[in-house]
Amino acid sequence: NAGVTQTPKFRVLKTGQSMTLLCAQDMNHEYMYWYRQDPGMGLRLIHYSVGEGTTAKGEVPDGYNVSRLKKQNFLLGLESAAPSQTSVYFCASSYEEGWDTDTQYFGPGTRLTVL
Amino acid sequence: AQKVTQAQTEISVVEKEDVTLDCVYETRDTTYYLFWYKQPPSGELVFLIRRNSFDEQNEISGRYSWNFQKSTSSFNFTITASQVVDSAVYFCALRGYSSASKIIFGSGTRLSIRP
Image 1: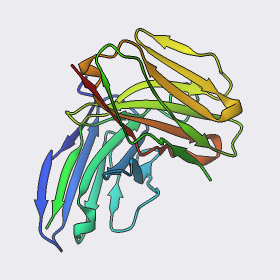
Image 2: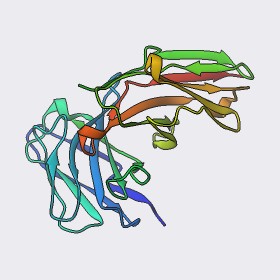
Image 3: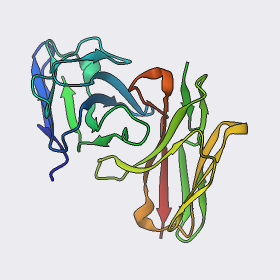
């Protein structure tokens, strides 16, 4: 089991460029999440998905879009990158809604710099 | 509203000392989960423990122990006989029953263990 993987690991963008971050999990988890981590602010939820074909907004969704076309993949898109989106992005997944099964497992992170 | 406060931004201790990381939470939910995650210098997030609101029994896992007190809304984490490998940022997190799949993270405590 690879668990949760993210590509790319690092990326540098210029303001206004677009890109897509890919998250993949091989644990057959229903739920997937995208977070951003900024210094001194912990992790903040951007978007999440409760199953294939579904997405929902989290705490800081502006400037991002997501898609969950396949159960194992969750894509995070930046249509027009801004310096404020410089951050470390983490993907996570969990089995399903349930009090014994909702622990989130995280990918290794993607460090994004927007110049 | 839900909130997690980790008032200790940074802690530095000498190896073999015991250290406690504080976590105070706020939620209106009567049913909720609390979590601790570890983020070592390599950057990945490692799940440590999940505790539900109905189980106030303290838990011990090797050198790690957790003290959950609903009366003070705290879920503190103690490392006994600390080691250099314990150096990391530690995050406390909360998921309330009413918040769907959203987990709220604290801002983290950076723990440095000096040899």
